[in-house]
Structure formats: C-alpha cells, structure tokens
Image (cartoon, rainbow, N blue to C red; front, side, top):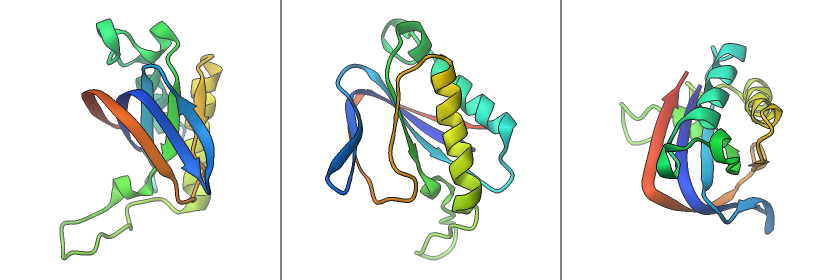
Length: 141
C-alpha cells in the first residue's frame, strides 16, 4: 500500500459537480493506492502514519490537533513507467480488492475520532488543494 500525504491549508474533492469532501483549515490529503498483496497490516500502518506523522505546524500530527483528513483512492500510485510511454497498471489491485482496503483506512482513521472525508472510489474526481509548505510525504507499507 502506498499513500502520498500532502499537508494542505484547504482542500476539496468534487464528483459530478458535487463536493464530496472539503476542509478550509490545515489538514492532510491522503492519496491511497493498493497493490495485490495488501491487507490488514498495511491498512493499519498507513492509517497510523496518516494520523501520527508530525508534519503539521509546530511538529504536530493530525491526532494532536484533530486536523481534517481527505482520503482519495489513487490506483495510479502503482503505475509502472519503466518501459515505453504508456504506464502499466498491473501493480494496482483491482477494484474489488482495493476498495475495501481504502475503506478500511478511512474506518481506522474514523475509529481514532478523526474528521475524514473521501472521494468516490472509481469516479473521476476533481481534487483541489493548496499544498502548505509545500509538504508531500510518500508512505509505503
């Protein structure tokens, strides 16, 4: 499982003209990709990193300051571009495998009492954010 965490001062996700998630204070946008071998251990690690990495102002974590999180499924994190000009998506888990694991990350964050918004799995999404810092962290589990 891979996650790209971006510290943002504001962010939103829009699907078919409707906003599905948004925040307007410092928080984290987490783009989460799933590969074939992922399971509960990877879910727990990624959720813990999203919640506990000290990447907000004053070296605080999302948990420390109850910052908002938006989780967006992102199969393209497993693109293989080593050959040619067309990415291969073979490393990404198929939807029936990936969707429950992304939802499990969201559930694990919510179990911590965090405010978590999401995109819509498999939909075309417009993700807007102001990267604060900029700070972008790659997490692999």
